[in-house]
Image (cartoon, rainbow, N blue to C red; front, side, top):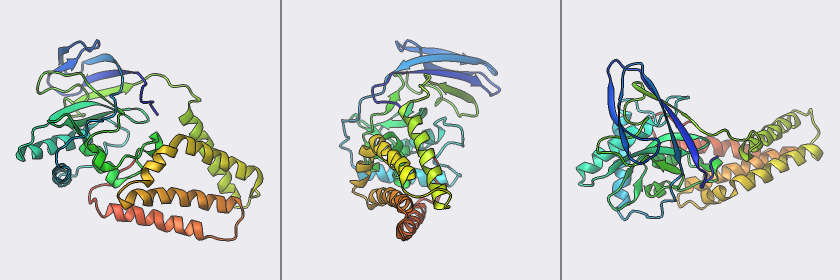
Length: 324
């Protein structure tokens, strides 16, 4: 994951795959202003930015949360009618899903007499992901996409040791995003200026050490669950090394995601605690196997809760499900 104070270098390769020239404003590589750019069909241009994440959104908006939430839900329902998916196409983190939802929400808020400003930038997940959100008149931030994603998948940001409630995004944000420098009215920095099928933008970022904490956690998790699998099948004896390997994984996981887990548990909505309890039951079920306990109660409880969580939330969202 990207640390909150980490400076990243973003390389954006623009490619016009359409049949006509594209003209728009683009923040220049020095961030000192904006550059008028014409990209002819077939042209490829490369730009590099050195960017730092914004500080956490401490300026919580005073605008009625019910109005903001209702507008986001109405915008989502409208887009669903045309086959909208809350995530971008698999393998293409181009920010188009967030952009479409932000634009539709902005349109609905305008009819309510609330003017907002569309903002483009990067959301710092496991890698920089193009993103779009709205700036409210009082300086707060409104992120329709993450508001809905977290309602549908409460532990979506848990790998980043974060589990903010969806309502955080009705006026604030998590402090892990980069906004492009301001440009003239009507323009956004790529890849959000034009539909992805017309203007393709590929992002790269600094090489991260092979043995960074996230890769190490993934390796330990794989080892722990492989050992758990063979122990459950009877090929490995419970206890001893198998138990030690899983406990090492659990301790490292707690160190990396413990704060986010506590945030999830403290949600005002019951769904946060249900997903936190799901994680507890998963590890309890695993330890039951590794201790050779004569019970299947934790495993049964985990399966039932897992199914209940996903069925319950899926019924609230008729569109396609959120996938990681």
